Image 1 (spheres, rainbow, N blue to C red):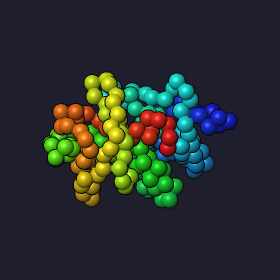
Image 2 (image 1 turned 120 degrees about the vertical axis):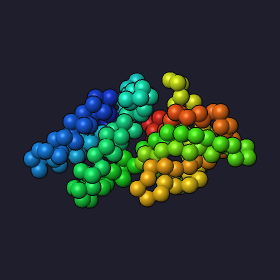
Image 3 (image 1 turned 60 degrees about the horizontal axis):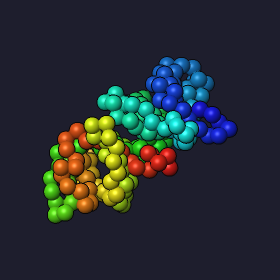
Length: 182
C-alpha cells in the first residue's frame, strides 16, 4: 500500500492471509497493526494498472473483492475479536460475489439461483459477469430471495437478461468494485 496516494497493490491480496495469521497468533500490538493494514487495504483504491488479481478459480477479481474473500474465510476468528473484527467483516460484505448454479426465465428477465458471499445492497445493482475468462456488464439486478439464515444460497433477478447468458459456473461481482468505486 502507498499511504500518500491511498493506493493498494496486488501484493496486499497475497499479504492478507499472512496478516490474518499475525492477527490471530501474534502479540496484541501486532494484532492491531495487522488488522489496521487489512482495513486500509480493503478501503484503498488500486493503483492504475494493478486493479485485479486471479482468484483460485482463475477469475480476474478486483483487489478489494479478493481481500474481502480472505476476510470471509476467517469469519469465526474475526467475529471473536468483537467490534473491530465485525467491522472488518461488515466492510468485506459489501464486496459481494454470486456464483450461478442454475438459471430460469421469468418474463423477460432471468432468475439466477446460486451461492452468495457477502451481502447485496438493497435496490438495483450493476454487476460484472465472469465466464470463461471474459468479463461482461449487467445493467440491473436485484435480490429476489435473500439467503436464509446460515445459508449462502440466494436468488437474484437479472433484469433484461436471458438464462443462456448466466449458465452454471458464471460468477457475478459488483460492477462498482470493478470500477474502483467503493
